[in-house]
Length: 164
Image (tube, rainbow, N blue to C red; front, side):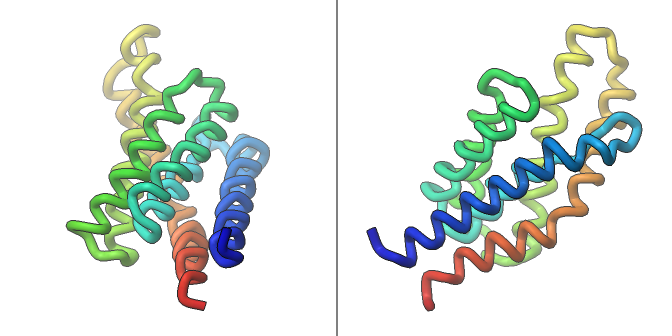
């Protein structure tokens, strides 16, 4: 294995572990109306955009496993973040530019999807009104967007190690 590829892999793993610790140990104490921000979906988007669909899908899989560990879901985030990482990479290879506007757009979409997936059981099975569930989805998405710039810089920085 190439030393640069190994270094990028280690840095991506460290980013995911840092985001996992933040999401599970720090963000749970920073609740707004009982809502915690999500950071791991942003990594799946970033790795996909800057390193392609395959890399995005593989690291999205890792982010999804960590997200499921923190949320207590079975495989929902594992599947979802794998798809988000892959399609972020696919879109950036063929349709979108590899820059902040694309990252922000795909991050908002990913966060909305992940938040909606978390809200769905409450709405569908526990009698939570659709309006209340929608408000929670929007609050969680907006709250999570605070972390867009740091994750953007980190994922773009790891990707740029290719040319050095």
